[in-house]
Image (cartoon, rainbow, N blue to C red; front, side):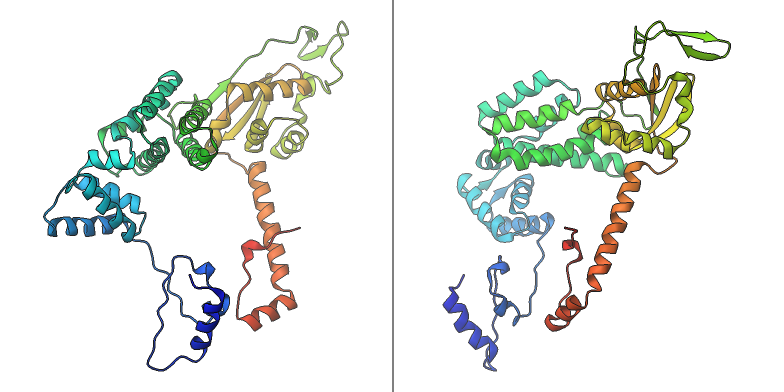
Length: 403
């Protein structure tokens, strides 16, 4: 990159260039160029090459140089090039020197610290089966062998992507072992695992060691593993709790009354007879906003739709895309909170497609509408419109935020 004085000298030439000279400036970091230079240049952003394009060029080079190679090894080099032919060629030179004129998979794995495909499959199998002990022991084995654990997490994320493609697009072809894994995990868990793996990769430099970072990431996946199974049918979780000993109820005809033998707690607002106060989704949303729930439980409530209250059973429908939130702990917490208000009831949560909009969906629509109104109001500002005309620019609407 040129110095500031050099850019000033170049700027004078660019303002009045000689007719016989064409300037071609190439850089991987255009942000470092002064705006005065960029404004006088016609910019072309080159796209990254695909892995198959890089692989084709690497095979062409190896064949013309009459060197032995394995195509899988060249594919690994192409992936590590990350769209850059220059980086891929640099890795190819290193691998040729490392392998004494050959490019083999075992040499690439040793040179780059890659974990074998079979090891990743074994790690994923233990993970899906929630075998925490075997997962930890296997990670320690990889660390003892000197494998790059960050690359192992990258490969595990790629495996999640392949399994997700297989489950979403059944016509896609994959190995038998990947198809077997796809039958052992639900789509919801797969999305959660993929997101956790991405966060684990970002947090890896902050971990005390690669081994600790990978262990904590995989243990987090096991902790968030759902026990709902792989079926896409409606699933019901129903947990009965013991009745509160201090509340005694007796039936009089068809109506249940609460005796005066033991007084309810001060937190109790209404008895079982008044449970029909919630009859629709709007009343459920108003009531749910008053509940003091933890983060996961509160998110679950926001994505539920009121169904019915009958025979002491409080039925809610939970958006099936958030089925991973429904754990025994969250269910017990929500049921306990409802019992504080309604007395002895049993909470029933059904995983299905909601018939009505959930509170979370309504909040998202409200937020989007508010943001659109804010952007529209900002773009109508005369001072902004004058600035856009003077500089021939457009305001970035994504940067408009309410203060």
